[in-house]
Image (cartoon, rainbow, N blue to C red):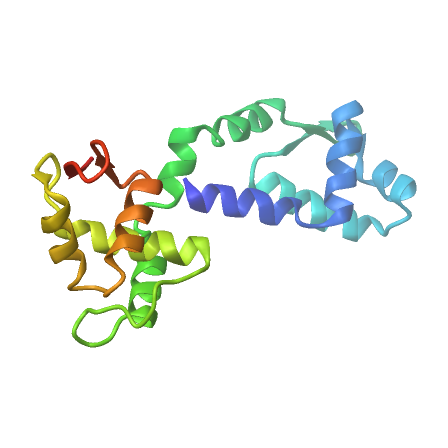
Length: 183
């Protein structure tokens, strides 16, 4: 499916091909008509039409001595359907979604896993917090003292880590100094 999208966009990645599609959306044309309208050679138009035909955007039918090209509306409709949430999600299958987090954690961590510093930049802080929160078991309730002990493995400023974990919704807390738990 992603190969199909790539080929479709490659076919449209030329201003003259877009113009041809626009013209054919209005009515069918022959190569000679398109060449005259766009001020291009007929061989150039034929080349562009072949690229568009490869992805099914145009088709030809013989009329007298000429081939008349028309836009394939069905292909356009099919391509629109390729942009559904489900199909777009399928395009990123196999992509390393945690790559950014791993790089940030690597940049901000020492070999023993402790943080050199707590990132100030929001995106980097989120990546580090997603790393830190993994020491907590989802659903298990921890006292503030237990949370501080666990967070001290990463950085001495446990209050900031604790506050940010709650602030970013990675952990919940009950009252001031009450229990903490991971969602």
